[in-house]
Length: 418
Image 1 (cartoon, rainbow, N blue to C red):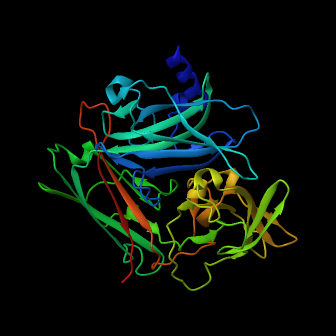
Image 2 (cartoon, rainbow, N blue to C red):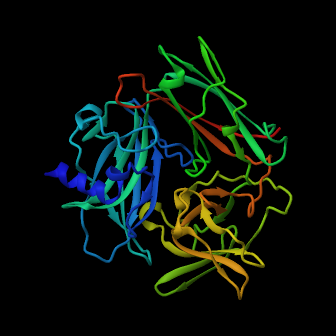
């Protein structure tokens, strides 16, 4: 009966019917501040764990709801390299333990104007662990209401047996020290590889953005001990600009890039300092965190349950509305650009505006425009070859006859100009 209910729930979010791609995102308006942190608490790390007894990922989030408290449960689904559901594996093949567990670690907020419940779960744990490397999505839902899926979260399990050597250059195959950066890398598998052209799937992401992920490209050189990917146009990315930053870790003073904080019942309201278009200005280096955020209340001891929520307004000054939609982007939006994060133009103030309910902390963000299906920093942020970006490379292995994509290599590299 449980399996049938979960299949119905997956159908409701379009997964089984259309092979929908999973993302880390809230699927309910009640869910806020999804975080996936490694065991060491590094807020810049990728949500990847190794087959190691001491390695785990902590998934945490808040639920803001006026309804009576409901216990939450989670289920783990095996995914392919492209984050669609793997329909060829049964749960007993990829998991140890029973795949329907309660989230027992939850606490109500303390001394906050916005009341919420903070939930947290470590994976793997005593109830469940992974048998296979690869991609997994964690679905969280209400107990006794499997149709109400509240969020999905991407995590990956790594069997690191491929060495990856990577570099990023601003001397690209389309320009030199101007608007782009090009990724090149080589792989040295530590296992017998029959056919690199068919057995490997490689993905490259810039700053963990979902919209500009690259895959499907082929190696340029194959030798017995190395597979090289160089001078590939699909691995040329817009260089972009450093992320913008702000600090709302205190309600007692204006943090960095904050214009105003005030309390108007029932919320705190904060205005981020008005931003300007940067594409027509010189590049300026800034020590950003490539889109990440960290939750922090400088006036309290427990950030998880004592950090408050602020109605946070972003403002971008533009004399005339532009023809393309503008979206806020960063880990505060889970690098997903949709209608929830689209800016609205106000002709009177000549500004684009967006207000989001955000938990206290330090945040990175940027503005993207959308033309067709493509998102770009070019119009608002500008493209500068000097920009420091984080590129991650993901290598999956599936030989003929195997029914899942093993994750055999992951690495990250920061573009740095000397």
